[in-house]
Length: 86
Image: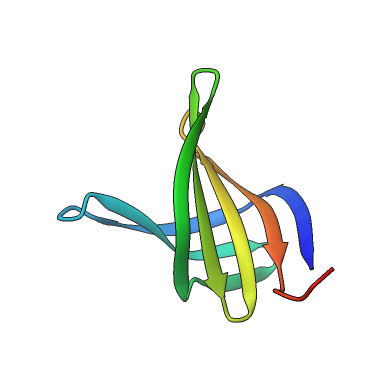
């Protein structure tokens, strides 16, 4: 089931200078920490003058959609899913 969340989260990232790529390593949502075990799709879009980077990540059996606002450098958890049908 997909749940729309839209809450701020803390995200730990890693930057690979050779690949020029950033990837989330873990996130903290509420009192729970989640280690990112798989990176899915990544894309970006512009909303006015602000670029947003979207990361789809997996932790255990949960799927998270993370949004990095490049204007504020704030992370938002947009969606979480357990992979089961609604």
